[in-house]
Every structure is written in structure tokens, then in C-alpha cells.
Length: 120
Image (tube, rainbow, N blue to C red; front, side, top):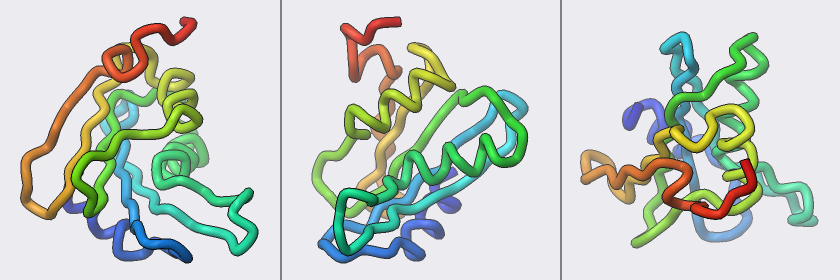
């Protein structure tokens, strides 16, 4: 997942400073990737997490089991909007990982740990 996420990271279209890549695993064990795609008006930015989840859904898969987000930042987890998608397709048990450098440690959480009061 890490290599796939970092490959997508390099394709990010950024107008700001942070390139983000993501890889997701479907319930069938297939891996999909995505990157952030920023728009000049910023209200239409596509986050890497949603980009990867969109690829999963576009392929016909309906279940998300894990997501890995990669970015060269000290600390980074999906935003609330991305977490909505993670909960929608992965539920509270979905594994959410973050890696801030290629080959570095991956910090792992369950979705419910990142948003413990999410209305399920």
C-alpha cells in the first residue's frame, strides 16, 4: 500500500504546499489509489482519500477495509469530510494509517479512534 500511495502522491496537483497520496483496500482485497487535486477556487479540491475511495467505488467495490494516507508532514490524519467517507464505506473498524516519509513508520488507528463520537 505504501508504495502505491507514494506513487499517487507524486501525481498530486497542488496549488498550495502539501502533496498527498492515498491507497485503499477493498473488502475483496483490491488496492486503489488517489491523490489530492487542487482547484484554483479551492472550494472544489479533491482530497487524496476521496480520490482513492472514488476509484474503489468506480471499480464496483462497495466495502473499504483500510486506507493509508501519505504526506511529508509531521502529523496528518484525514479531515472530517474524508472521515465521513471512511465511515460510510469502511465503518468504525476501518484501519486508517498515516506515513510521513517513504519507508517510514506507519501510524495506524481505527476510524472510531480518530472520531470516537461519530454517529454510527
